[in-house]
Image 1 (cartoon, rainbow, N blue to C red):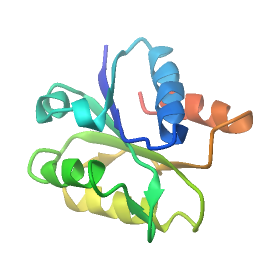
Image 2 (image 1 turned 60 degrees about the horizontal axis):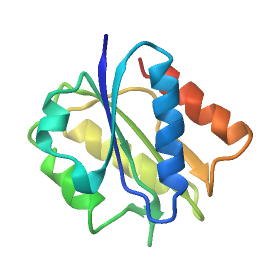
Image 3 (image 1 turned 90 degrees about the vertical axis):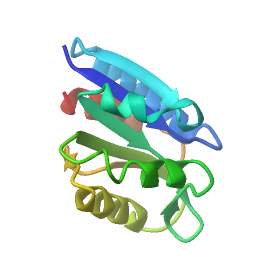
Image 4 (image 1 turned 180 degrees about the vertical axis):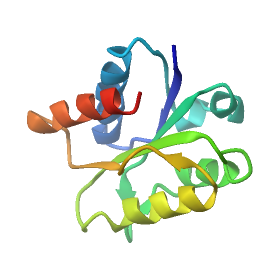
Length: 140
């Protein structure tokens, strides 16, 4: 049974809903899931997980959230190497550059990325809900 930590930041609820749906997909694969807002997450949550799933909305000039998520991601620099990692998040504008940059950054830290990051424009509804659940299933 895989231990999966889903750690996210959500300002409007869009990324939180994605996290919940991804957790639902992971749970269908008989995995132990820990769903945490980044403000409650610790480095031990990373160390104790087989798979780490990180979520953040796109902010400002297509970057991850800067007050909570950015410092947390920076703190992973020396401990994420070799760890399986998946990324997700919501956006309202742009073309997903923030996700591509985040994926590159995690690769530079030595993380083993599981597929491409999942991005959803706005709140996940209808087909986007299914994409989130399937994303959760696919990372196990």
